[in-house]
Length: 322
Image 1 (tube, rainbow, N blue to C red):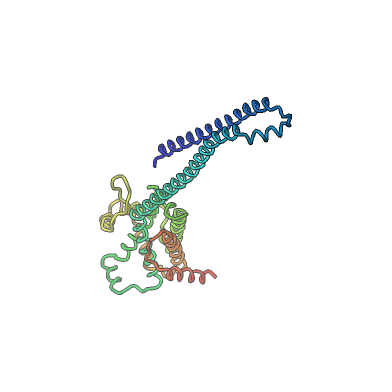
Image 2: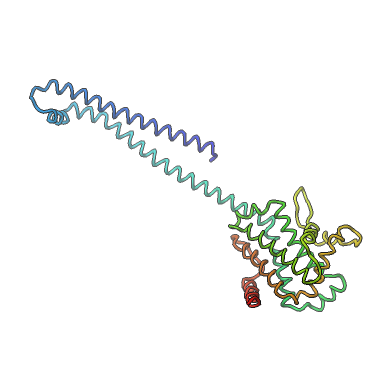
């Protein structure tokens, strides 16, 4: 039901109730006037010498009073009951209208959550999990011999870590410039604040870790990596494929390569020496986990990182900080 139709229905309802109240008032007034006239006639013709109170009582027992009263009270009662029924009907209609509005709002919210989840949040969670597991591997798993051979051959660890980290930073940028943060609160309360604040904290930790690794990874280095991952399609930004990103690094003499070189240097240092800075790794994983836990509040949303793994990181970090 549109707002215009609802307004018209409400106007008709008020007009009907007003009309019923008017008729009840007219009939009630007519009842009083007629009885006053008839009582005056009755009093004039009564020569018994009774008091006025007695005359009123006798008049109320007379057939003229009973006839006039019965003829006018009946429609008054009818109009009153109709007015009452209209009121009850209005309450029911308003209740139904509110139910329909709430149901429409719920369906709209469900559609919004579904659309946002399909467009961004599923892909964002995959990147979060990829980065989380990459830092997890730095701490808890030795690099496989095959992986090391591939790193020497084609830079597998460097480029895969660079792409995963770049996608995370790209989403931070994309959420901001595409206005996605404003859409998130309808999915889960304060989800936008959680993601925004945690990504800012992770960015600061990466900057600090870069300094520890003697390989700077400042804000604008991170921004260059983020924008190196992003591409524009039909006026909207999205995340490029790994192949598209690797093409930007094909020419060492290009501007793109020079802008991304600090990020590559940071990732190489991270792959080699990350285990020496365990607390930073754990703190980054903790903040990634906070975002993952925020996404879990969305109904039917699935995440790759298990609760026990998130808890393990928090426990170890708590132990280190004591």
